[in-house]
Image (cartoon, rainbow, N blue to C red; front, side):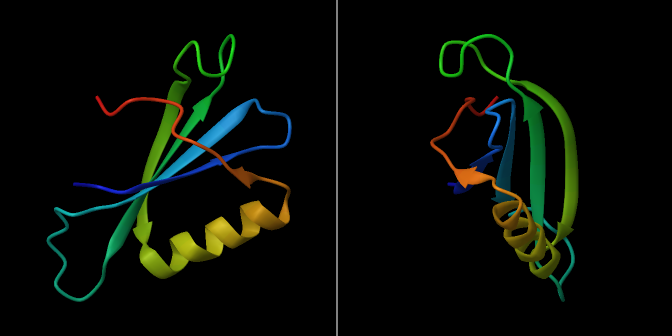
Length: 83
């Protein structure tokens, strides 16, 4: 089962979902997916529109998480279901 970590920006208009790529074929590095989405309508009533997905090494994902937190993003509960 994949564990997800969520961030939402201070305007509550964008979200990011961090998740480990459990099917990575690289034997030397671990990778994370960072999914980005825009909030459309009322948060919690409608799923955000997923706009991008990137796959990066775990250490770079940690750096991205820290950068976003420094910019005012906050942890949040899941805002869209796994499809």
